[in-house]
Amino acid sequence: MRAYSSHDMLLLGRIIRPHGLEGVLRVQSYASSKDSFLEGGSVLLRRSGGDIREYGVVAVAAHKGIVLMKLEGIDSVEEAEKYRGADIVVEKQSVPLQEEEFLWEELLGLDVYLATGEQVGRLSQIIPTKGNDIYVIKGEKKEILIPAVHEVIKEIDIEEGRITISPMEGLLDLNEI
Image 1 (tube, rainbow, N blue to C red):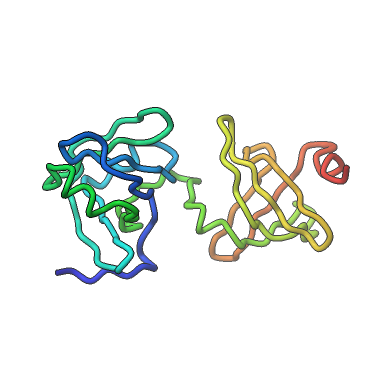
Image 2 (cartoon, rainbow, N blue to C red):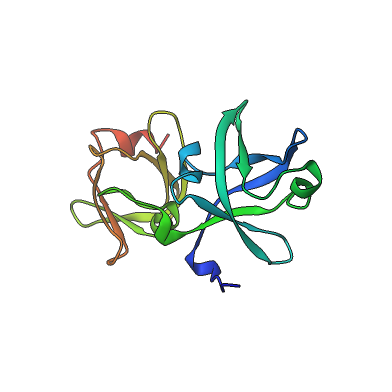
């Protein structure tokens, strides 16, 4: 059995419970799309005891705010029940990223600066919305909410640990209300 490092893993979701009698899993997804579960062709199920097993992904479908997932080798409600509460993880290296696309965990904790060089704070949270993500920046005295759009986010430098923003006129003033 292969050894997996939790540092190299990316959490995609958690199994809620079985769905039906044929081993389909109901999944609470943390991914931006159900397609994230299909990209590597397989996923790792990590139970609370720490053991990890790899399964090929047969099918994934969105269903009433959750994801239904069928995996190779899980063909009964009894087998699916064994994974209730298990994490669904993949190796980070198996997640294809486009240019200027980052994993949230790479961004959280980065220092945020204005284009003028003034430090605004640190990225503490990311709120997903239908249009674009919202970055929550924790400053010395307050939190600032900014849209994660190209008009505002000018540069993300993971190696330097910084994000440079150029907020739209009035954006930082709105956060002072």
